[in-house]
Image 1: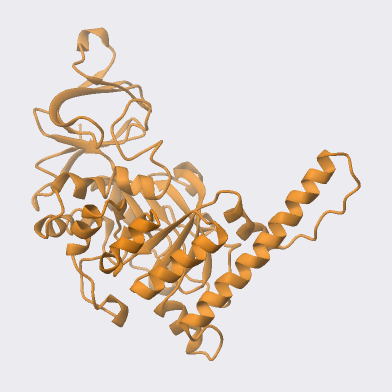
Image 2 (image 1 turned 60 degrees about the vertical axis):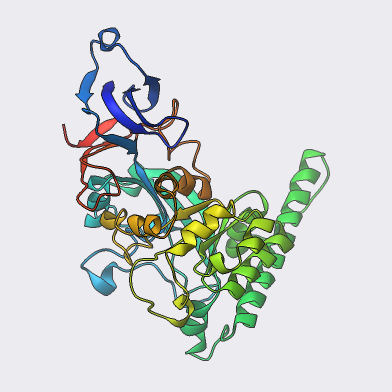
Length: 391
């Protein structure tokens, strides 16, 4: 069904922001933006936004929704395989519970896309995926099946393995293990590329022995992005050092102290996802956590998304922490971009979601008030061109 939203106070996250105009969808995609004559589309469902704010659906660039199912506890937690610090063969899509009530809470709160995956217990934890927030099975929800390879530095791997007297118990060991497996994966990748080249050239060639871990990890050398969990400045620098050594496409996840070293992030043209910033400083490496981080990163020209790290901040409260970034100097529009287009950019899915633009997925929210107003609610939520909440 075509949907025509009239009189939207549109915050498109593209060229049109805080302007009254119309948006037309064709049942799946956004097809037209501007002044639209509804008589040309007699079969379209017309929604008069009456000047209310209209944005793209929100994008969470880093969370664990579906991996840590709400209310269930141990039985619903499949986020960390704490039996081996190197598990690149794991895939989030095999551990996600699509009937976790938090997906519905996210959707009805305006969150239409989530990037969810393994936690940070392991040095190499497996692949994140990008999902829409409604579906009977994970397969119904998939936007990108294997979005990025998750890795981690800092306290979490040290705690999870050091306490059991196994490696890593230091930051040196964490970095060494990450490098060791990247070296192995690079060699594995190069052998397979040579094998394929020889076969194509008609040469006799022996296929390299298959290795599940290396087969998965080797994809970071053919374009798969890497998400590296790092809070402290030293861990952030290590993440960038390793990424540069191996030529990885990488984002720093959490990046709590990134605002203390913005010049290094800028010099590396490093994209990051910050947060969760709301809440207590639950461990030492969060000691410098601050809402001023958004302003500093923005003023240094660093592209960043703002995460919930759900369930640390529940996705139904995605907007709650944003006003505090504005309070500390991050411009309002840039704050909203951090949970829409810039969040999509840091996850390399901005060609599909994150803004209201012709050709993109029709994920649209009509808000009762300005999105950063604490009393705001998502009145109408459109996902993939279908009204999931509201009229």
